[in-house]
Amino acid sequence: MSTARLLGIPSARYAHLPGLAPEHLDNDLCRPPTLTSIRITELATMRAPWPDVSLLMAQQPELGSLGVWDYLIACAPTPLEGIRDGAAHLGTVIDIGTDTLEVTVDGEHITISHVNHADLAYEAASAVRACALGLYQRRLSGAAQRRLIPVRVALAAEPPSRHDALADLYGTRAIDFEASVSSLTFLASDLTAPAPHAQPGLSAVLRKHAEQTLAAAIPLHNWLDLFRAALTTVHSDCAPTLAAVARRMATSTRTLQRRLDEYGTTWSEEVESIRRTHVTGLLRTTDLPVSAVAARSGYSDARALRRAVHRWYATTPAALRRSGPGAVV
Image 1 (cartoon, rainbow, N blue to C red):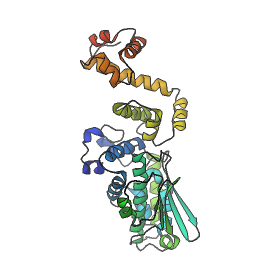
Image 2: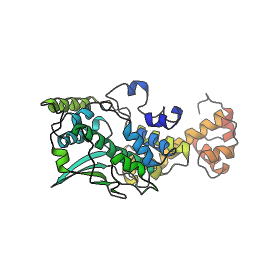
Image 3: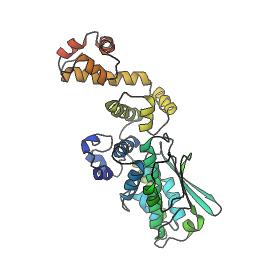
Image 4: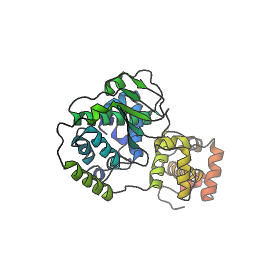
């Protein structure tokens, strides 16, 4: 949220999102879902290019602000052992249903990958992936007590018109775009050298604490609640599409449809439900003409809206409007 404030985004645009209530933000066992971070990032990319947003987001979290996850990396015997612990306990800071961290050792090089399958063209997801890599680099550099510069950066993102902010973020212009997975590749010698401030035995204590944190984590909403929240926010901006909601949830359209099926519902049923709620609210609380209500609710014209209202309530928009805000239909 600090990035949103720095970019001048009114809190009313995001304060209602899941996980941002004060009682959740003040509780280490509660983590805002991916939907929330993606939506805030989406709002940020409306104010600044996504590379600038990723740099700004990566600069915000100070050591300790991410709880035990930060210290798993900072206090490990080597940066490599720390990032491996960070990968194993990534669920203490983000939703591992959509994002994962992988560490690969290949001879003289070690690659750290942030895996997220959102569309490469979706700027909010590009900013999140680039930020994640920047944050991993910051924490590894902190553990090593010197800035570690990757020999290669790969981003699952379309090339931006300028990437000076990314060069500042990573300390190199050796950045490849349109990669299948976002990753940083370091010299193995950089990550296997003993960490100056490592504390013997502390890593085991921190791992146990992280496991207890994961076990006690409080799910703020089930998946269907999060889907409906994403659908609502997309609907407030434009006519909702399956692809737009999938992007906001950082998942694929196929996975989204499969999950809807698991919950016994369908895309068309959910869109119909949110349109019904939206139309009913507009008719009962505004004086907008039926044609304007239709346009704001994704219907082609007033006739289509009248058919929908009759299907839902066996009445007309005018009669529904007369029933008033408190009426039960």
